[in-house]
Image (cartoon, rainbow, N blue to C red; front, top):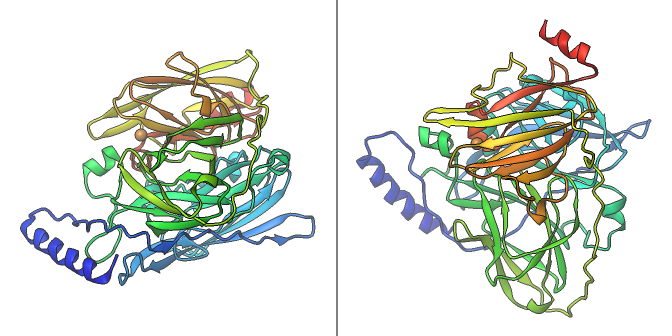
Length: 480
Ligand SMILES: [Cu+2]
């Protein structure tokens, strides 16, 4: 935004504030220019410890960012002012992460999508006090995927994410290395973290203010990708891989190109899809990830837009270089999903989403850190049935696992969710069934969470806790 436009809007806003009896910050409106280059989150370099362990240092800190050309927005970030670096690791790596809390309030970092024991998971029970460091070490034993990290602080997750704490976690394995697909990070393999924010007249973030913000989730009229408002990206005249994360608190995106060009989804949250799925639009709810391949060979020298069909807004300007086009052959097959095929499920658990005016819960219970809601036996396969009797769609996320979608309202899942996932968008009046296996322990002291990933819903209590324990006997002891 040009400074003059910003000042003019600020003046207009202050007039309306005088007329407004309620003490609610007025938003400033959007000015689209796509004048800023897309930032690519840097890849964090690990220290290699004696035993080959990769050690990463994350410093969660306060910052200031000039988002609106002249304003200084107070932010949070990881190793920087806003958002954090990308942690890139391989299957079978053992990693150690030191999370230093340099904020003036408690926080904790959760590794969204990582299959690690409850003690390493970074749930609200793991809260880190200001100036303390939490060191956690675990082995990566899961498929190549785009995961991410973000705060999971008790009743403060939404605000801390909104302030800017989030980063990517890329896992590589044989599939991702052997497949003939674009893989040069930041060049033809582009990470895109989609978020939205609203700003007050003095350039500060406006977070939750009203009951409406809680019930609908906080959205904003400014769209950010990798922390940059309305950015542009320059790409070669070839096939490009986009790794998409919906890192917004509550906004759902229906991605598409302005020229309706087709693209192929190749991966979901926790794995590649069995084969590429041709699409023109892609819905991504908060917490979900997708990887897509887009062919730009027919667009050399042209400017395109990748945008959101639901808000009818362009989000990213894509300038295709005027260079000789590079051919690409799309792989027919990407991977084989072997997980959770058996029919010997030992448990069916039902989770009914529960929304009433001023009340957000699951199975009629609001989150209570002192209560364990479910007890799972380590290594057993289960079916989790998520029932959404409400009109609003909710993204349901489960810690410590990946799952396979069995059905939506009794019908087969969509083709682009035939890989493994950890977050499922459950539409209004829909019932979804998931096949899950929990391979790691989560004790009563450090249980896993399941929750709505609309962060204001999560903070308001739409969340539960569960343990994963070795035997039934041990599980019963938890009750006593
Ligand atoms: Cu929700």
